[in-house]
Length: 77
Image (cartoon, one colour):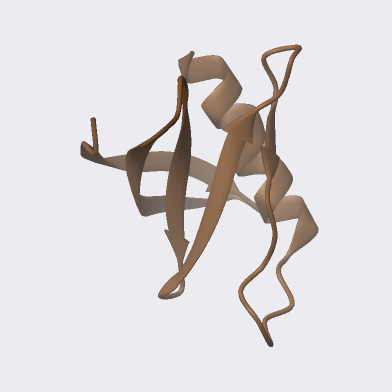
């Protein structure tokens, strides 16, 4: 189930195409999204929304961008 795809979003009026891939995790799945060569892992919560599991060490993520990605992933499901 590790199927790569391109996640297309618009953030701050800029179209972005982010490499992503499904990752099987037990009975569920996670989605790894690459932002500026850093991998961020998102997983669905009990309500069907997505949350990011954490940022790579030494990286300060843009919270608005992570929120936009989570919202887009929720719309895909």
